[in-house]
Image (cartoon, rainbow over all chains, first blue to last red; front, side, top):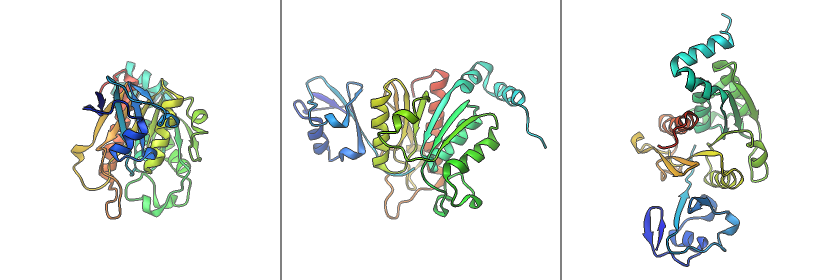
Length: 64
Length: 212
């Protein structure tokens, strides 16, 4: 199991890109932290989630 | 009336904040990226607190549509925001070292323009620009502190705006969901609440308090 934004999820084996698609989030409006490390945008396709990982997906909305 | 001397102003700040805290505030360097409703308020809070060095950055000019929530004056319409705000900050805190950049931040210039700041505050309005800055800062400067804002539009409760610690060096303020849309604009107090969260988190970090 992978912890995604504090909740356990069966995201094992998914790439970051696939997880974002599942969540319905645009890659251009998020920042993704995997085990407290930023995942560079260029590595969303090649980074695969494993059992025990903790993922924080921060989604940005407009306004400021 | 002549303005107070550096020593007089520093003494007044140290009396309010305590000598130890003021020493930390005066030694700190903070970058405010985006000088709209969030950034103009954040920079003013930090200048009032006696932050020693402020880098203020925006590519835009003051527009009449900004005046409902941003810290500009009708006689500043058309001026670059960085220049207009620099003038206001100099009146509030004449001994603050202010560097004003009239430039649009991108993946290429962020690493050089933000290298000198201990704390970087994201205060853009566009969601994709926010994400670009946050990603670039977290990749380029993993040891700096980053405070971003997301979700402060509309007439929702001010109480739903919070500061969240995402990781050790990354804090996020806002309600996380209230997007700007057709008829859901930004009102001064709710944006200012978010700005105050961001500015206060910066002061807490400088004070050595790293939780929320």
